[in-house]
Length: 283
Image 1 (tube, rainbow, N blue to C red):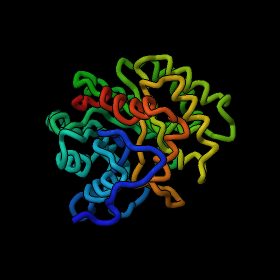
Image 2: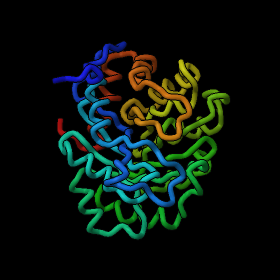
Image 3: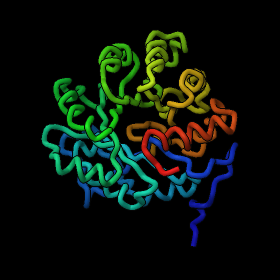
């Protein structure tokens, strides 16, 4: 029997078949997958069942589950969620020098296709760059990419390193630029310039972290990135929105897609074709 909160949503557009939530998380349950002792926040449990219920409600058939910093480099909760639906799920891990080759091989088999590094000051000091490069050297032969969570000026600061990487790079959440500076702001101009490189992708997620509802001030940035690299943009809910002060309805965030991708073919690329190309989903 289908629960009421799992019924298909009625939104501003029909979500394409096999649409992918390309940025979402699972948290716990802590009694099975404990949070890291070094975490900067302790979330409410949101296990794989909660994520699956959200995707049923929104009509999403695929997902990319991103390891959250509260779990550190213990990727078991993320991998467990991948194994619940292998054809339709991919993952992004967090690793360090203690991650074994056997663990990397197991994650590859489970559907992990990238690693992520946080450079957000609120989540602690950024990782040691020597460690970053050691980790990239280990996963490059697997064909994985790297996801970078940077904020504002961090985009410009890291631009030389990003350009030098010999692998695909995905920049989270529109680069977390300051909307008050507008699309002509220096950090955003660097982000647009980076997208001239065919290896570099960007997620049009995290709008709720840039602006408050109704989120209008974030939309020009999403539109500009859509124009700059229509085949290298991704979208995700960021469920369950860790460290967000104000609750947000993911259906409202999904409706915003119609604001910066008004054409059906644009939404097909953003929600289906682009994530399928990067993450190797079956046609």
